[in-house]
Length: 154
Image (cartoon, rainbow, N blue to C red; front, side, top):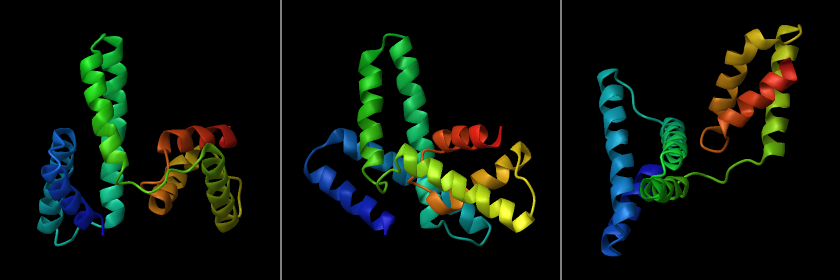
């Protein structure tokens, strides 16, 4: 389970005095605790899939920050964000290749077209992306998936 792995890796990072890993894992666990509190108020629990989606969002934030720091010539901060990005990525399953993403998008579009017995268009983007998020949380770059879906539907 991902929670257990996070806690074990935190202990290991503390023992190894890896400050970047310690701070990043603590950041992940804090975000997870926030989600746990919100879910508990609704009488639910946070699923593995939701944890993976949260970590995907954290990765997206880091990539955006890296780009901004590089534009602002703050290479020290960009490097720090890159190190955090690598720590977060270490908890995710292997990422899909561009070819696999395109194949998955085509598959979902075909399924939706078959279910509805009609042509799938841009108005179905939300449904396509929702299905992809359910199936491939933590494994797929949804920015690439969105671009692939738009090109297929245009």
